[in-house]
Length: 151
Image: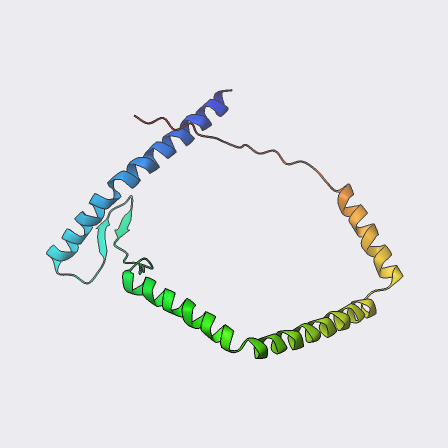
């Protein structure tokens, strides 16, 4: 039980440290920007020692809740519905044609598959599946669930 207890303690400590790191990250980012600004440097390395190198990364994000973006989305939906209504007959004909082609393709694929198999090949596949099943074995492992305790 000594190793299990130690593993549980370490995993719990890791989770607590991750939470602490997440909590101080916003302040660390601000500190990093201060360092970049004070050094008038284009390099984004804000900390470097034997333990770690910390780099400010600027990732692009978009706000799809922005009012102008939301309005454009709504306009696009309205225009799409309008186009669908005005071209309904042509769209129906096109969909029917596509369905016919899909049926022909399915039929051709079925014939193709039939050409690529034989009773002997199927027997070999079944024998292989049986042989693979005979090699089944169990591999031990541990699932660790950390009970994170807030302080």
